[in-house]
Amino acid sequence: MAESFGMLRAAQAFSTPREPHLYALAYHRVDEPGHRPWLDPSLISATPAQFEAQMRLIAHAYHPVNAEDVLHALEGGKPLPPNAVLVTVDDGYCDFQEAILPIARCYGIQPLLFVPTGYVGSGIFWWDHLYQAIYHTSMTEIHCSLGCLPIETPEEKLVAMERLRRYFKQIPYEQAKYEIAELPKLAEDHHDTLNWNELRAAVRNGATLAPHTHSHSILSRVSIERAGEEICQSFDLLQQEVGNILPIFAFPDGVREAFTPEIIELLNAKGLKLVFTMIAGFSRLTKNDPLCFPRVPIWHEMSLAQFHWHLTPLHWKHVSSEAKRI
Ligand SMILES: [Zn+2]
Image (spheres, rainbow, N blue to C red):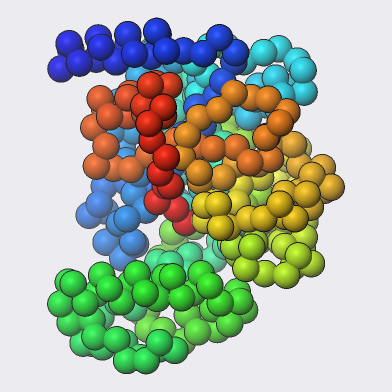
């Protein structure tokens, strides 16, 4: 293992581009799979132990930067150091304050959290409600707009989950919200999304918050007027509740189909300076494409050696994949 890490260090060092570039890591949840079995485990990016090992590696072999450093460099200020890494986290699950922030702080790392403001303090995201309707039920079928889907076996549950997730991402948000509310969920309420007091505490402890729309709508699937409202509403609400919000944004879903040139133009017109996608990769921090910035997706089956390999330019030379996203 030590040998393979030595080779990775060499791959990192010898292939590092001369111009400053940024690895923006994309996390969702950091938790043990069995800790909250009512939440969709596919959104777990790392266990706390894996996350700690990853932060230790970044602190020792890379240069962690915060959102302000990145904006400053983008605006012509102090350039980013070589091998700059920004830790980003999407959605605002409670494990951000329980695991992500305390571990990151131990290594002097200040994560950037993207918040869909409509879900702050709501307790549950729609995709976890869907997960409960399929995985935490004694029913053998689920009745929905797609008809009557069997959910008796693990394979049937998997198929139903994927079909419904795709369906709800494609229909208008209000309709999806209405249909998801009709699905059964656990009788017991859980507190799984951060509330405003917790978000303010996270900022006091070094996190940066940025908008991720209000409803977590996929912007390419709503009207341009609605997309504008989603962007402004989430930005204004964060500004009102937390203050000092930087002009940074992340697209829900984040794949190429989740946004259009028209939406990027809208973000530009609204004064956003840096926008993260879920297109997998790393990039130079130039003014050419800061409104369409790639990220390195992190998933929990990833070994530490794989994690390190994803933070080398050599890896991205022959990879063009899209990340697991929500
Ligand atoms: Zn998201």
